[in-house]
Image (cartoon, one colour):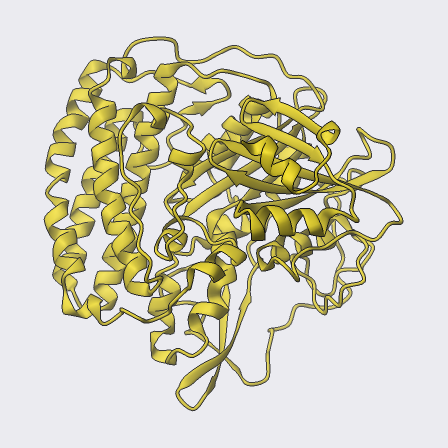
Length: 521
């Protein structure tokens, strides 16, 4: 089926390289890229995930590349455009807005040439010299960047901040809005305050098997989905088949993590709209989930379970029995979620911050944000991984696309996650069988791993290098994709609704900037 789609979009079959059963790499001429993207995404409806800048100088003499990642059920497509040093890089974000951030990031960090009028730096500080290209292979990870100017506060005429940074979160990000009368007329997001160059660290200092430790620390809420996506990327590159027991363990921890994340946001939403009793009740149920994680791995967060090829240790019958008892108590959360969804306070958010389906597709929205706008896409089902193809669950979909729908979707997903956990806990494979598959690193292999994080599709891209290291590692967290919808959902709204509309995206800003902060004891 996918070959037929490629032929209809006039992609020569001799340019196709099948990396795995579900992964295809296609070399595309830069002059054909726009037509190919327009056909595959805008006409055929494939989902655009991200694009990645690659310096191939260590593998291909003097060549750079942009790799565009598209998906459809059971298939991942990577469109690779090779660019010589002096060539102008292609761009597609004028026809596909979802590509704007990843293209700007490649221009900024790899120094790709472009004639586009990019007025400001995207990741690097505005005072950094233009010849500084941190993701090039000739730039060492321990080189210090000297800025031409001191830091200064970013001020935009006519814009005001939504609170000091944002009232729901602790991370440094700026959400600026411009208000005329009592309506928002423009929106500006400024991030990358907490970018720590995790990709450069992963490529330069760590062995392939050490990266899961760092990947899990990208986020303090959904770190396990990052280590899983990374391991899956390497497993895809090296053609490693993960044992069933490890796949069930991963699925169990991923769903516990999903519930824990959703209940935290739903509790904060309840608090914000004046439902303090539901706020406390949801946090109490969240504690049951954290306790279940503690029973299984000895930690409430930072599980340390994933290794390439499987998992580090197996769950015992006694641990599974204890978690099963906790899950029985957790099922009562359905009553609290029902009270939240039926409250008049929440219903006031109907028709607030609406994201139409067509805009959600063009902007690359993922997860509950996309599904609330009628996009029927879930990586667990459509690009099945871990043990999801061996369990039964529904993917909640709504079509109103408003703030209310985004919250209700998470309520329903929480119930579905409990359903998945119950099925996994009943499987004998969870406590019997091999834990991991041995593997041997090979340089120059490309792989991509995707998981359905609590906030949506999470993408890790790798190219293996020499000496058991990574040649390239790219992380695209779901919030990175979802923040592109800010203008659509905020413009025309009352400024008093801005905080709750932004919160309905459930933005994880450490994931977005790929923060890793490890304290040295």
